[in-house]
Amino acid sequence: MKLAEIFEKIVGPDAGVQFVAYDGSKAGSPSADVRIEVKSPIAVAYLAQAPGELGLARAYVSGHIDVHGDMYELLNRMWSLTLNDIPLSEKIAAVRALGTKPLLMRVPPPPQEMRRSTLARLGSRHAKKRDAEAIHHHYDVSNRFYEWVLGPSMAYTCAVFPTADATLEEAQYTKFDLVAKKLDLQPGMRLLDIGCGWGGMVMHAAREYGVKALGVTLSRQQAEWAQKAIAEAGLSELAEVRFMDYRDVKESGFDRVSSIGLTEHIGKENLPSYFSFLYSKLKPGGRLLNHCITRPTGKEKTINKGGFINRYVFPDGELESVGHLIRQMEDTGFEIRHQENLREHYALTLREWCANLDAHWDEAVQEVGRGIARVWRLYMAGCVVGFERNKVQLHQVLGVKLGREARSHVALRPSLDWP
Image (tube, rainbow, N blue to C red; front, side, top):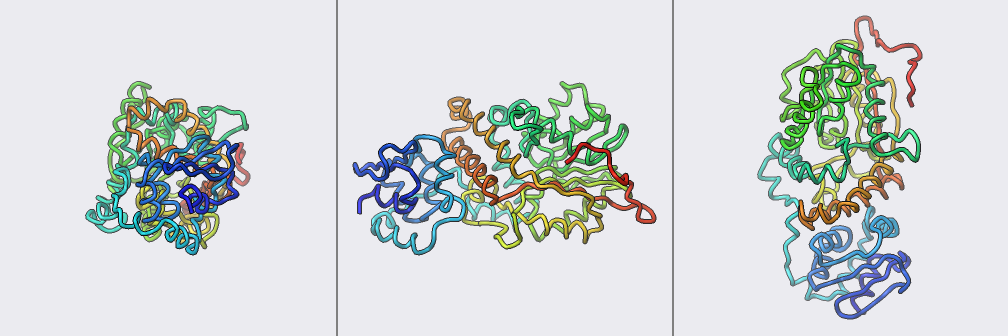
């Protein structure tokens, strides 16, 4: 069996993809609009040593495989491989077909891959030092790079599209305003925004609602960018972003807490202490809005230690079902008042980010290197497929810390334009 035919077997003969290899072999439809080019024996070694998603990702990130055509289309057609991995029998067959030579060619993973040993030296999963390194790995890439990908809002979380043709900036404004309305922000309130990113929610709350907002992030680059943006917007009296672990926030008595895109980094075992900490920061009658990526059921693995996302994008990231999160919030003491799934909105958001990266590809490669740019191209396109096919979801859950005599301080029928 020739090399291109082996790759076709692994990816799937019905994927609508053409394969060409350095040995001159070809497979698949010559008229296919997506082509995978196997450029060197190192690509074969990566695949032999890690058949499936991880091996192909290593070969692509390192430049030993090229993708010609739309990355989303490729991953959408390779759905069963890229997101569910291939069956063990197919892996064994592929390795046998490749022969023993690639298995003996030991090549290290690309430098963009987070090594398990690196994290292990920093303590157990979700220890403070280890969390800081995991966040640094992903978020301290380059603020300029993020400006190109995320656009002016610098919001790296799911947007909410009021209409299908809304711009990304309109959708991110709508997201922040939806959070603000669910929290019922009022002038003079105090908001704690944990995992605040580049300060989008903090600035929105201060500018639009007159709220005194504190944001915290484990990314030094995010905090520096946010503080500068706050000063330039003339919001320094109301808004602040600190470079610190949320667990080190000393202040309490907040009227509202928002957590937008942080719960994914907390870990299943730490959820009780996470929600207890947030509960302790709120006044009686205070509200928490938790916005995070979720699994569609409680049956899937919460973490795929050997997967591409865990190795290259979100080290130690864990995804739970919304049912599990709600139970943890309830057991902490929160009364759940509302929840909604924004799955389709995240697919639309990621499509916009993919388009932004493509539009700034050459600058992005120059700024962060081809390997990191390829990680992002692969990761974001794959996530579009994941949200579209309901492999992952995005939920907002609103909880209330009840006041005296179990008062919720929520109107009988809130006159809000959500959902």
